[in-house]
Amino acid sequence: MSPRFAASLLIGIGATLLLLAPVSWLAPALGAWQLAVGFALLRRPAPAAASWAVVGGGLAVVLGLGLALAGELGAGFVAGALGAASAFVGAQLSLASHPGVLPAPHSLRTSLAVATDESMKWVWHATSFVSRPPAPATWIEAVRAAAERNREGGVLGDPARAHPAPPALDTCELRRIELAGLPAADLLRFESGFVPRDPEIRDAYLSLERNRTARAVLWRHGRERRPTLLVIHGYGMGRPVLDARAFEVPWLHRTLGLDVVLVTLPLHGARAAGRRSGAGFLDGHPLFTNAGFDQAVWDLRRIADFLRRDGAPALGIFGMSLGGYTAALLASLERGLACAVPYVPAVSLPKLIGAGFSPEQQRLREALGCDDALLSAAWASHEPLRHRPLVAPPGRLILAGACDRICSPDQARALWEHWERPSIHWFEGSHLAHFGRRAVRERLGVHLRETLSARAEHQLLTRFRGRLQTP
Image: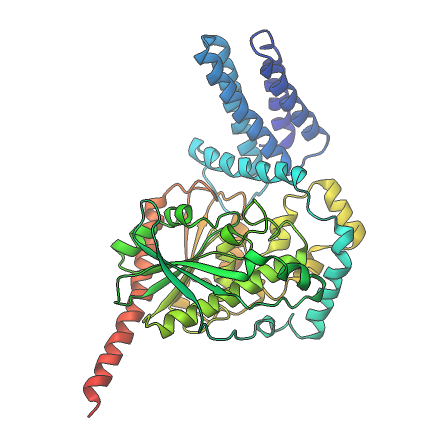
């Protein structure tokens, strides 16, 4: 759908909603919303237009339901139909903004999946007005300094230099916890001990007291150690009782028979710096992003060491979205992993963040000289596409949404190319609406059995044979 055609439809929808003013004062407000989006789209196409059209349409659908319940069936039907049409236009506009990346069916189900992602993007955009990130002028020199340090220190060519091996996890707290509706688990807590490399933000980052304590929830099978899957949540998540359901921990634990370790990323969940989980990780000072990913890998490597010394026969990594980025990074730094499974992953933050910028924001970045190349150089320590994977090719699997509007399909394809085209499974849904989830689960289950469980069985068999051969 072309922007001009979409604009014409939105203007027509907005004008019709204005006619419902005698029935509800919300109708003209929503009509003005769609008119504004339509005229703005006519003047200058912008990535945010799809989100605004989808959210305005969703509100009109809610208005229609309210009118119908109040007895205004005709007006309710009109408002609901116009809202649904607006959301559909926004979804098609979003799909048209990424032509040629990956063919995706333009069905109603696909449109619903896209609309779900666009709604979340609008929420993030709206919250940025309430909690504004620091202005680029306040951090641009620090980013330039970080990029120069990476050049001089050889991190651009060998980013593993930025990740020294952390000390063994000898002191930790492990206690039993109960999470509603989930198997009994253990909470692992320990002092992270991480210190950021970038001096510009070191003191500010270390002042976040809650973030200094690393956390993970462990689901194990009594004293018997099973093959263990490290699970990493996405951006804004970090609440174990919810994350465990998103990752289907009971299925991983009971059906596949795995030990499962759900890790809390820095600045998320109980480690958050404020009320919002993830605040400051991607939307604060850019060097906080460096510290966040570097600390995530630091903590994960310490947890992996703890699990191996505790008897885990094999380890794998599974991460979603931001966790997929982290999983791809860890797969390039931690030796001995049986498998790595990034799920709807991001791999290039400059492209991911820049895709949501308004033209004004883009011009401001250009005026300051803050292009994608500069950010990529400053973030070189953790960009998965700069690292070489250590997990063997059969252990690599990528799960991606064909119409993902948050971590678009070109991110997953870039990782697929960089990882030498391993197994990849595309599902019809988007970043938040995973249609075809059963097929995704079946593909994941097969992969974990063939890699993680098989590695554990091989290790146990090798140990058994070694005992038999010992005189």
